[in-house]
Every structure is written in C-alpha cells, then in structure tokens.
Figure 1 (tube, rainbow, N blue to C red):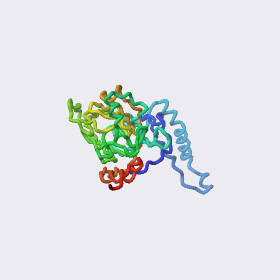
Figure 2: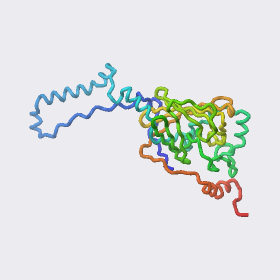
Figure 3: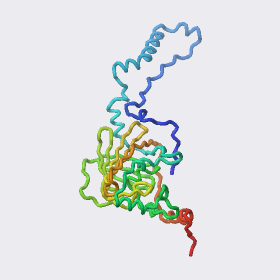
Figure 4: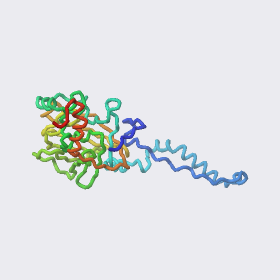
Length: 310
C-alpha cells in the first residue's frame, strides 16, 4: 500500500467550489534585452508608450472583469461542466479522521448511525471487529478474515485508493484493497425489480447537474458496512453522490436506506478525496494462507489464544 502523504494545506469548503478555481494569470510582461545606460536613454518613445499602456491594462484588468462580468476562457461554464463530469483518475481520501492519528475512514460516520432494528442489533452484537469498542482480541470474525470479497459501502470507506474509469454507457470503479471492481451502468437503464443478492450489488448512475448519483440495490447480507461490525442487509438501498469540486478534489457522500437493519436512513457528511495522478492501483489480493499465518502469529496470541500444535 502506498504511504498516505500529509496534507500540507487545509482545504475549506469555500476553497473547493468549481466557480472559485484559480483564474489563469496574464502572461508576464516581456522583458526588454539588457542595454547599456546610453542606449536605454534613446529607447524609441513608442516602445515606452506601449509599456505604459500595457501596465495600465494589467492594473485595471481585475476591475474591468468585475464590471463586465466576463471571464477568461478557462472559467467558461462549458469548461466547468466538462471538468465536473470527468471523474476519471486515482483518488485517495484525505486522512482527516475523527481523532488524531486515526485514518480517514469517516465517509461512513458512526456519529450519524441510526438505531438498529432487532435484526440489526442481533447482527451487530454477534460481530467481533478488529477495532472499536466491541473488539475482542483473538475473537475477531470480520468477513475479510475469511477473504470474502469486499463491496459497497464498506470498500468506499477504507483508507486505500480507488480508480474511476468512464466509458460510454458505464463507469468502472477499481479498488486496490482486495483488487475488487464494480460496474455502474449509465446507459439510462433502471434498477432491476428483484435482483439476485451479490457482494457488489447492482448499480446505476446518472448526472444531476454537476453531481453523479449512483443507486445500488441487490446486496447480500454477508458483509458489514464499516470496520465496526454495523450490518448490511439484502434490503439496503445505497446512494452515492460524487462531485468534482476542482481538478484535484472529489467529494463523495454516502446515504444508506436499510429498513431491515436500521430504524432510520443513515446519511453521512461529504468526504473529500485527492487526485493522485502519478499513482497506480497495486495488486493486493486477499490470500487465505497469509491471513491464517497472521492470525496464528499475531491476532490470536494477542487475545491469549494458543496456536501451538496439539
């Protein structure tokens, strides 16, 4: 896994609007070649006048733009729309976790989790996550320990990069962890009425202005929605909203409507992701032998469970 780089500049919402992107500066004034002092005194007067006019235009250009309302070509609505509808690239969530030293992993935020239904509470009580207040060392039973394939919404919340690839009629998302991928259909089709339960679910997407909205149903109930054991049922309707705020920043918001597991809709705050143009999605498969070796050498002994041959 690639090392998460520290974010040097704090990014605010106001800084991340498409209409606030930096306006390209006018080209620098041309510098006249260095001349001996005597030759400088005899510069053609028309050149001096040209420099004076250029300087005046440069000084007044902001006010002129403000009065006329005209923008440079890079800021035209067409250019902004083209940028906002292009989500392609490798994206990595900002490491702004809920506590110092905690990875990002707050696209699904426990502070906004609604109460469980009886079914959801029973599933949560049976979960033994590898972290959080209900974790018990050596007794973990996370689905990923069995190399079950990861899927939404949990895979969207992990501190690992993902890549978006857009082609006519569909969008692909490739996730580094587990090397899993999903298809989001964008050819205008509707969600199926009774889909077969799967790990990734069945997804369709459409544009609403500058926001790409993804609806997914047809999940199985074998995965958790987070690393803490919150359940996912086969009745979940997942909605993701993606918005490219500027060239380097993608906003993602996750909303889960799962009446079998939760008494209310679980709506999470938006999460920011940074474009990593030089990154490639690495190969990271779950290998059961490696998981078992880790469990025997680290996880189980940490809980006082002997792994010595009997």
